[in-house]
Length: 423
Image (cartoon, rainbow, N blue to C red; front, side):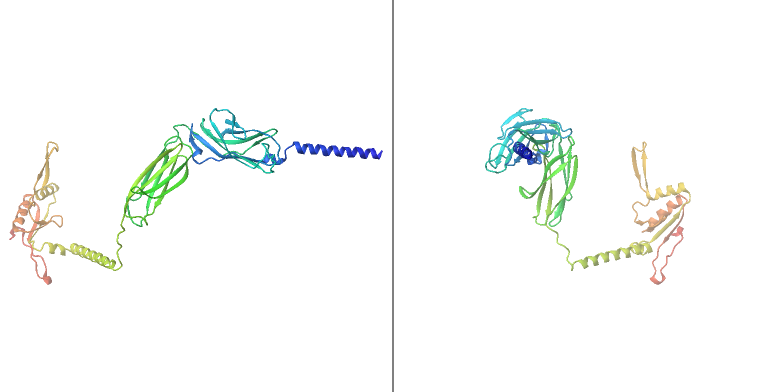
């Protein structure tokens, strides 16, 4: 009895072992699900394109372990809308890159670029016990507007393997973004060793959206390229920045600074400006500098002396030393005062509602005189003084006309004569 039970237990154990062996052979191991799949790489230029342009994914690949026996049926490369994850285009192909099917005829080109490892076309089933890697380049001609990404699917007999998302790319209308470049240099001319600055404005005057582009800045001396700098940039609508221009090692002459903005499908926008590099001015030496300071001090002192002489009246005495007569008047009546001023200095007359204007001369025209204060005149001759007396009396002004006498410095004073008896 016990012997029979033992036999049954042994038989059941053998059955379990056989079942485990069968499942281990027919079922791919867990590592098969974690195969290395990559949807490939996109160049910066291919991340922003017009509708109808072609984008290329390079180094699309998948790697499988040599222990797998899951037969590969075909591969699927699909394009998805980033907004709703819907598939908008796909192509299926065999391991050697031969296309089997695509939902947009002629929109895909598949190239098998490399196979590493060895063995049969099973997942990892290799007589050389070596993992196998397949590499492809796939080009896709865009046919929809929007932002998209790609995925690679490997379909085998019993499993389907899926890669992660690729880098997104944006497709714009054919007349989508259009850029304008503005360039301004801080200085039109600089000395050798002084820096200049370029202010660069990039503006998308077309449809707004993120655009990946290349900006090239080049300095020319005639047709000779002095230096050139290129950088990758991303712009949505507008950007502005400045870039320094060093002149330490530049020869004197005229230079051209050019900016070229490359974007989309071989589109460019550019701007350029010229500036002059001059021989550096000779700096003032420490021996010359004190003389400049001394000259400036002397000029300031002279100005201060002249101001003092003018305010104190001495400057007038020096300037008018040959003058002999002084005339002072006062007229309280406003109308007669204005008439007297016109008689002395003249006035502008007009007719026909201002159409014609005439200059009327005054009695002072043609005289050598100085008018230091209101109602005061310094005259050269007795004849001129007599003319002023006539005008003063004509307009009933109170006046005082006298002859100036210069005395010695210790007794200096003015001597006045009665206005009616001027000598």
